[in-house]
Length: 386
Image 1 (cartoon, rainbow, N blue to C red):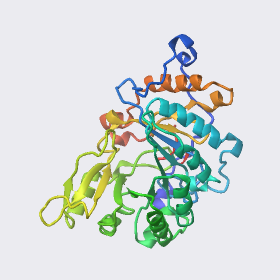
Image 2 (cartoon, one colour; image 1 turned 90 degrees about the vertical axis):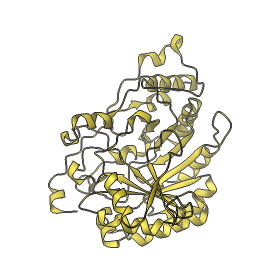
Image 3 (cartoon, helix red, strand yellow; image 1 turned 45 degrees about the vertical axis):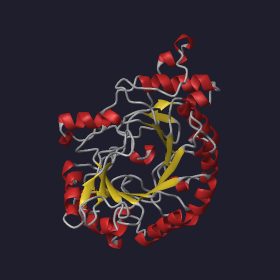
Image 4 (cartoon, rainbow, N blue to C red; image 1 turned 90 degrees about the horizontal axis):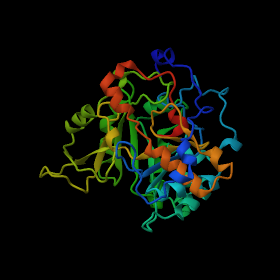
């Protein structure tokens, strides 16, 4: 972290204690929405993807997510009793699946810090989509605990995994995680995940101009032909603690251009509706995509908003439902759970919340200009997950 970084961290505005009121229609039996697997919001975006944060804790202090100046030894984390139990998470997941969710991603914080996470994975792996297929069940991790947990995660029912890795140079990596954690241990975790069959593995690299852009080409070389998909993510204005500035964003177009100076790329079609990453395949000698060499992805949430196809809901570790990664507040589903609401009531609440959804923050940012900066209040990525 540079000296400039330490002087522009914004004080944390805790959003965990407040929430939006549940829609009154959610409790109106006459206006009950029966689950039928196709739930759309005000912009016609279907609910297909649920991100579940299982902990607000992390053992890294990456300055773009959990800067040490804020998340220090005095920071107050959620109490265990405030967290959704595994049974509560699974019960809510069933209601989302009834409305069409096909994919669940477990996030954090660092999800592998949640004790007995394998038990939750086992419960979720038993759920089925409306057409009887297993869920697309995955997890995002910083990889620090992956070497010792990969086999157990696979045995529990996890299908695949995404690992955050912001560089291969050990000095750069230690500086970015800000806890002096060696990159070799994360690479060992990735190897363990591959050996355990957690595939396909995706590698996420947040690119921050002036910090780690020199790692783009080494990362592209390293993972080409590995069977893993490397994705470059623009540094985003999530939360209010990372001092985000537009001049530290390296546009994805520049990332692609840089890689193409050494490794020819061919643009590929999206693999599924609502996909956030733009796909580029490594080209062979004939100039066509060579599947053996693999592909990369670029996620351009700052320079190329993809709000129009966003099909994700986000559930915080204490049961707040967020409709956007950049939201200020969520809807308190935990209160319904712990007030003995029926499954029909829970499903109805989810339906009315999603049907009223109109969030499109990235499009608004693009229209207003990114240099307006984030608002004072914003849910933190470490609380809601990426």
